[in-house]
Length: 160
Image 1 (cartoon, rainbow, N blue to C red):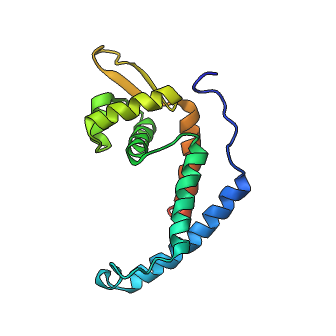
Image 2 (image 1 turned 90 degrees about the vertical axis):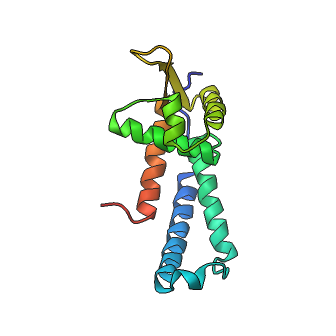
């Protein structure tokens, strides 16, 4: 199977919708409480409920299921940087990716290697400097990120 092969959705779209709706409700509820109280009042007072935490966990699990790859914080930071670069029509080489994602270079190398193995990232030699390796999202993962990020944008109320 090629890295960009069409992968069927790993989760039920109704389940994703349900999780997004519940998360949106919790985010709106929490955002209202945060805006009403000064930061000093809510820091460390445990205003988050177990349901709030479970909603956050559900969104993180949904990200893994939607993208079809396991994403550590470092991998997620790198994926977001690669996605932004793709939208801007620019490329990132390995070293620049590690800096842009604020990830230590050794971590970036390890994560890149793992993401290349899963087919989430692609690589090719830089067109003018063969010493550099250009890293990009695979088309399949970019399509999944399109969907996931559009859903989270709507969830956060950022849609224009």
